[in-house]
Amino acid sequence: MPGGRGRIGVIVPANNASLEYDLWRMSPEGVTVHSTRTRPTRGCEPTDPEEFKRELSLAYDLLREVSDVVIYGRTYGTHRHVSYIKEVADLVIPEEAVEKVLRKLGVRRIWIGTPYIKQRTLEEVEYWRSRGFQVTGYDGLNKVKGVDISNTNTFTIYRLVKRHLAEVVQAEAVYIACTALATYDVLSYLHEDLGMPVISENSGAMFEALERLKISHRIPGI
View (tube, rainbow, N blue to C red):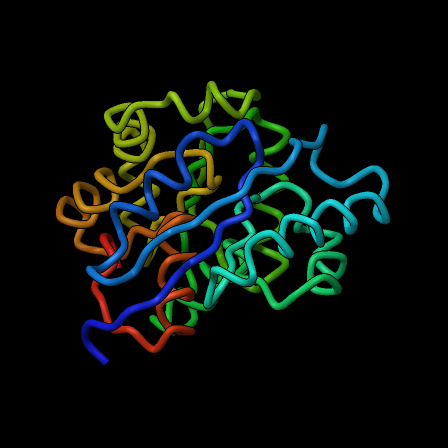
């Protein structure tokens, strides 16, 4: 339905300074965003699964009474161990939310942009290929630290995509990875320029959260 009210909870790594900003800007009137932070983990996957689940459960417990739906605001740690997250609660997982949007739109070919170093970018590419998508091209910004990623400006993300235009136009959609990137503005710019869906993890997460709330609202780039 158009309009509506709801509360979206967000579990955010301590060094992510962009996810809440994006979600606040994407939220329709009547929908509020409420967050709690967790300690960032080293590397792509949790080193101690039981400790990871305990910390995630604590964060979820802090949010669930004030939230109608909760987003797990992290990319790292979801490729091989998403089952740990799902043991804790039925959370919106951004990467899975993006896949749902792409499949809903009938997209099979994507171009991938990340803020990561080459190795981590290639991991992202292989993940999407394993999900059955054709990747027409990719590039990264060679960043590691969460705060450094969050400090990335809109023009830098825009240029990351546009400098690979020959590969991008072969795709049916552009995917921008990482919840620590602020993407609200660049989604609209690229969508208008390219004439195709441009989806970030933050926009995908908001899309699914609003679907769970049964609220109809246009998300930038989709």
